[in-house]
Length: 236
Ligand code: IPE
Ligand code: IPE
Ligand code: MG
Image (cartoon, rainbow, N blue to C red; front, side, top):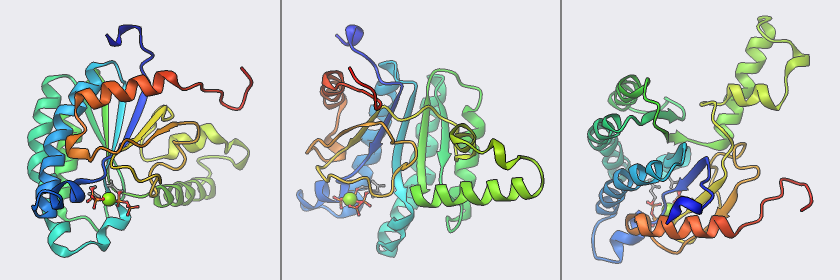
């Protein structure tokens, strides 16, 4: 069915609504994160199978450290256990996994897990999952500026060569621009996600909480994307 459809090269998902999914069922927020992580593994493989080259997912923002210790700990434990298991499945399907975000103040075991997954999947060529963990769009741009200043001072780059293309190379990952952003659960905001990369992305805000955003929901999202008319500042 999707053969005739335009498939976006880079899809990004703000995986929101785990907490609401859980509380509406009388469960703890943590159970929502568990359900969300189970959904991600299936959905990510499906999305890559549809021909999407890069899938970026927002797993934890720099601001999410404001949450209770209990919730943050639960999420960090999920990242070390669940992600490691999922990475083996991604690896079998030739999918590369990369991470975007700051290390500090992540736990050492979380950083180690990210390194192991990156290493395990680094030579895979069948699509990329970019997991944004302890990620903030403003933090990323700040880190880019700091690196560019450093490299300019040390003579590695010249000021006259600083342009959009170079800035892209200094981002956490050098990826194509985002074509399609999906934020589940209905909130209409980007919450500090990939501010540079979203410049001409089509935005879509389905009301479905992330644990329920299944393959069929992604098919529907693709239809929405296909009805959009992209102009990139030009005229039709
Ligand atoms: C998104 O779901 C997952 C993370 C932020 C880690 P939320 O936990 O934000 O769920 P809601 O928005 O409270 O329902
Ligand atoms: C964005 O969701 C972060 C992730 C999905 C990881 P939030 O739930 O943290 O965003 P706000 O607080 O509603 O803007
Ligand atoms: Mg939320």
